[in-house]
Length: 90
Image (cartoon, rainbow, N blue to C red; front, side, top):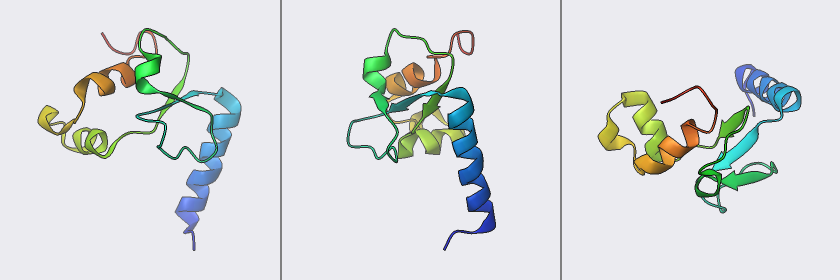
């Protein structure tokens, strides 16, 4: 059973998707993106998008919590994913 907080996140997530229509990025094609059309991070290399929604890998999540680069897993994929929005990273 979903908690009220989880239900609220689901609504806000759907609202974000409907309003901004982000490009969904995933690590590999076998990553579940709940029915959302998605692009593999490697395929997005060299492209820019106004908005992206990243389905991070476990190592990416671990890095974002710890900020320890040794925990980032594939650093090149993380870099490609977070720099698809122009002007956000250099």
